[in-house]
Amino acid sequence: MTAEPRPWGDEHVWDSRAELLQNSLERYFGAPGEQLLNNWHPCEPGDNETFNFWWLAHVLDVRIDAYLRTGEESRIEQARLVYENIRRRNHGSLFNDYFDDMLWLALAVLRLADATGDAALAAQAVRIWEHVHTHGWNDHEGGGIAWRVQQPAYKNTPANGPFVILSARLHERTGEPRFLTAATRTMEWLEKTLVRTDGFVEDGVNRLGDHAIDSQWRFTYNQGLYIGACVELAQAGDDTQLAKASRTAHAAIAELATDGVFTGEGGGGDEGLFKGVFYRYAGQLVRAGGEPELREFLLAGTSRLWESGFQDDSLLAADDWRRPAQGKIAYSTQLSAIMATEVCAALSKEPISS
Image (cartoon, rainbow, N blue to C red; front, side):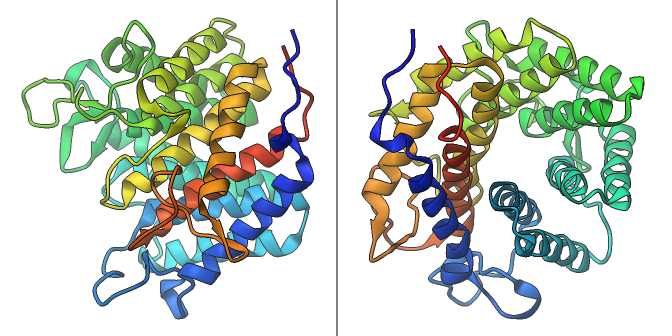
């Protein structure tokens, strides 16, 4: 069965939207000097006190998305600028106290290496992997990667999902068995500990030292990370993984979407990025396994964002895509809109699979 085409399937529309949103980062959030991007729009005193390492890793990622869509070298230069900005602001280091932060950077840097053929960048991604593998994995809660140095016994999906994805990609790139061994071992821990039988993915375990699972934290990006991990392991040869990814995608939509759209997940800033993570990896699942219903959800939900938020030839995204932006908006929220729109631009170029 082939799905009927929809008005939002026009690749030229999505390309134009993606380009507008890429440029919106400077329009709404551009900042002089080392700051690069203001954390919020409008920006008020104190708003830039936090160095959002992992947000910037996703800025690097979306600039690579733009390059892959357009082939424009200026987008690669933007990506390099972001990478250099992260290193300078992090005192020249690739590392910090948060294992998930470092993994987000490694994933983006590896994509930049693949886009440019820069072997030195690829080596940086391996350095991060080795650091996280050495210092992040321990036997608390039966294994897994810790969230941060200060809480070695607290394990969560935001640290373990990216580690599986990075490990599988490094194995694909190098053929070295150690990467696939680590990916498989970490995936087994994640599934045993935080993936429910219906496929829904919990956030973390033992945050308070009580061995409890944080089932009250129901976030789209946990679902997206597990989907991405499944897709990567499927590409490594495990033909059971795509069915598990599909189960999680549909569980996430059933439990977290309202009116066919993922709405706001919190107002602290980090939460603004969560939908974009889901979109990035759910888009990879569509490309790997067809999934016409998931494709429809991704396109329709992002179309709703544009219907609600496009005003005066621009779009500033709200955390709830059913409504226009109001008040202060974090650039993390804008990044989710960019990621979703780039995913839709890519999907609109591909034939609809049954």
